Length: 104
Image (cartoon, rainbow, N blue to C red):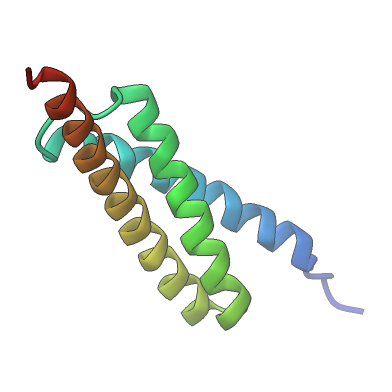
């Protein structure tokens, strides 16, 4: 018999996707927090919210498209977009709350 190729279970592939979404979400959360206007909730929470947005967006698309290469690319793209949008929305909400408190 020839050399045996390593096979990965769906669970291992799915775990790699989760790690990828998490890392992308942290990075996008940080960047979105720096780009958007206002302080939001701080760097740490921007990164946490980015990671949550990426996980939710990426997992939702992974469930629809599966774990093939095209599905991963689309899910990763949606994860990045979801993370950025969620951080931006929370910055708007935080700034609105700050404006209410600052008004006499």
